[in-house]
Image (cartoon, rainbow, N blue to C red; front, side, top):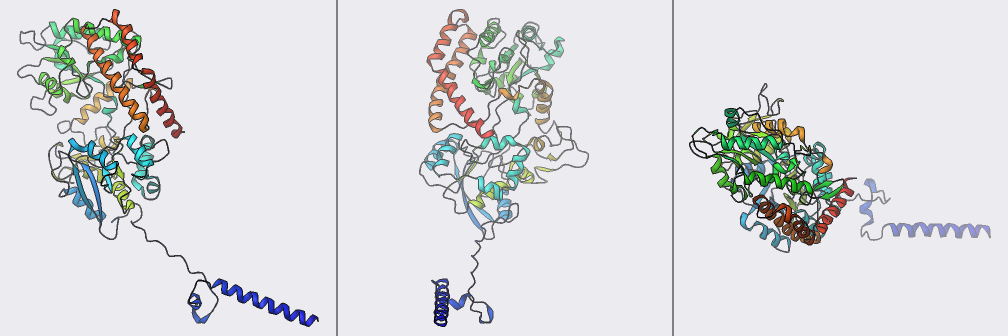
Length: 565
C-alpha cells in the first residue's frame, strides 16, 4: 500500500514539474531558442532591449549622431542680416549636428503670432526670443502645449545647472508655483541696470561754478538755481535748462530719482513693505515729494517739456550744437540724454549724483526685481526630439558660446584677454572687445536666444572706456549707488500670475498707473492743488480698487514664497 502511495506521489510531482515547464514557455513558439549554448534546455530570461539615447551625454558634442532638424520660431532682430546664413548659426550647426529651420516673425506681429500659435496654430519645435510671459507659461504649460523642462535639466543640463549654482536667483525666478520650469531664460546680470534710477549732471558746469555735487534735496535745488542764473555755459544768454527729462525714456521721468528722497519709489511702483505688497503713491511722503517737484516747476528750474517730450527730443537738448544747455536729467544711462559714443563727446562729461537725502533722512537707491529675461526658450509638444532641442539651448550658456552668439567671431569682434590685462571690475580680464557692437552684421545672433552674461562675464571685459560705455557705468554705479542700495526685503521677486489674475491685474494696473501718472503731472504743474485735491486723489485710487490690485500681488508673492522655502 505504501509503495503504491509513494509511486502515486512521484507521478504527481513529475506532472507538476512538466506543467510548470509548459507555463514557463507559454507564448514562446520556439522554447529552445531561449536555451543556452550546448543544447542546455533550461529556459533563461532574455534581457530587455536598451533604448538608444536620442542625444549624446550632457556636455558632449555633437549632440546627435544623425543630422537632426529643429524648427525654431523667433522674433526678427534688426542687428542680424539673416539667421539662416549667419556665421554663428553655421558654427552651431557644425558643432551640434543640429540644423535649424528658421521661422522669423516680424517684431510688429510677434505678440499676435505667439498667441495664435499657442492657442492652436502651427506649433514649431521651439519658440525662442518671443518672450513667453509668466502667465502664458503657466497656462500653456498646464495644458501640455509647452513641456516642463525639469527632467531634461536634471539629465542634460550641464550648463543650466552650473548657472543655477552660480546664481540661485535664476532658478528661483523661472520656477512656477507648481514647481515646474517651462522656459529657459537669457540672464544678463547687468550691474548698472540693477540700480537704474540715476541722476546725471553736467560736470563742467559744476566745475565752472565751483559747486560740489549736491547730497540733499535743498542742495540740489540750489544747484539748479545756479545753473539757471549764473550762465555756466558762458554765452551771455539765459538759455540754460537746469533740469529736464521725459516720460517715455529709460528712467527719465522726473519722479524716478527725486521721489526716492521722500519715499521708496521703485521702477514699477510696487515693493515689499514688511512682507506686504505696497505702493508709494498714496502716502503722505509722496505728497511731500510732489510739493518739491511743484516748487522746481514754479521757479522754472524744471523744464515743462520734461512732462511730455520723447527720447529724441531729450537727446536734442543734451546734444545742443555749439554750447551745452542741459544741466541735469534722470536716466538709466547717459545715452538717454546725449548721443553715447557720439562725435561731440559730451556723453563723457555727464556724471551721476548719489541718491539725495530728503527732509525725513531717506537716502536710497531702488533695486530692480531680478528678471533673468525669462520666457526666452520654450519647447513645444510638437518637438520630435525635445532632448536635442534642450541640449542645444543648454550649450548656449557656455562662456565661449555666449561670446560667439552675443558679440561675434573670435579674433574679429572679440578675443580672450592676455595676461596682465585688467577687467572693468579691477580683476584679471577674461575677454576683450575688438569692435564696437550695435552694428547690423551677420556674425552673431546679437542677443537673440539663450545666453549667460554673468557679472563676471560682463565686467571681465578689458577695461577700455574708449571702446565701451560699461566701464563708466560700472564706476558710477559702484561709487554712487551701491552704498545706498535698498535692502533685499523691499524687493519683490519675479512673480507668476494665473491667467485670471493676469487679466484682472492688467485692467487694474492700466487704470491706476495712468491715473497716477496723469495726477503726477497735474500736481507738478499746479493744475491740481495739493492742498485742495489730495483727498479726492486718494478717494479716486480707492474707487479704482487699489486694494484689490495689491491683493493680487500679495497672492502671487505668497504663492512664489511657498516655492522658495
